[in-house]
Image (tube, rainbow, N blue to C red; front, side):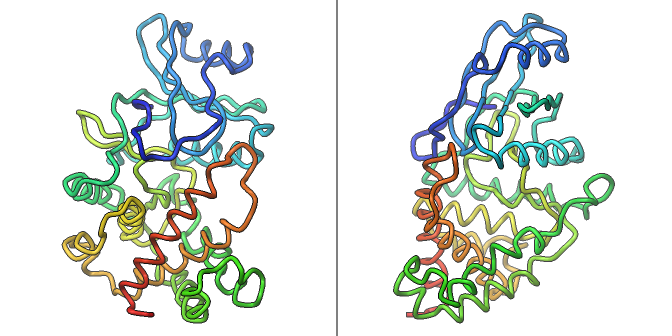
Length: 318
């Protein structure tokens, strides 16, 4: 959807080009676009296996095509269908590329308008963080309604994941935890479960906001990959963005204090949300990598390490 991924961002090992799609799938997409594809450029980054390419048609129009098949990863087609439903319903105020076409015949292909740009640089620059924190507020300008009213609530989305520390506390994988986590496991488990209450709300939440899901262009910033879209509290995406800042070595606390929305959130709500993420990733890292996504666990481990350090700094738990 934008330029190749800058150094430092996660790169999927199995991105495929436009020509890797079966001919019948390519023909079906071209028929809907009304013009044959005459050029394509594969895009890197992210974790979904399959096709990710910007295509240029004979009529000069350009589109971003992402496509996946269950043989590459059985979960990804489900996520693409979820993304398609959300992308089709996004209100105009939301800075996201517009969905133009969905093809679904085993291969699930989503066709978006092409956006010229690239993800923000990492490690994050303060000016980019502050700009994106402002951009996130466009998502929460009004409660979700219309077709988005069917979005799952954030607590439902996270219910199983945020009980990971409790499962680990019950003896199902203590070896996956750091010494610090084991010392404070009951506290972490209780906080993560509290987050399920704190994250409730009626506002649009992307729930996976990080640098490789953002395209910065001359026209502004665009948020992509809406598979996890939910309805929840208006501060969640801002904290997710700051988790990404911490993941790449930045200090998130100054942004937390300076932002008007985040400054109004009770500190224990933020800490609880971080505890939920930490437990979710700690449990995931101990599992084998999903099919077709060999680098996911390493990135989850990177995030988990950063979030643990942030919780420790916020709480003073030694």
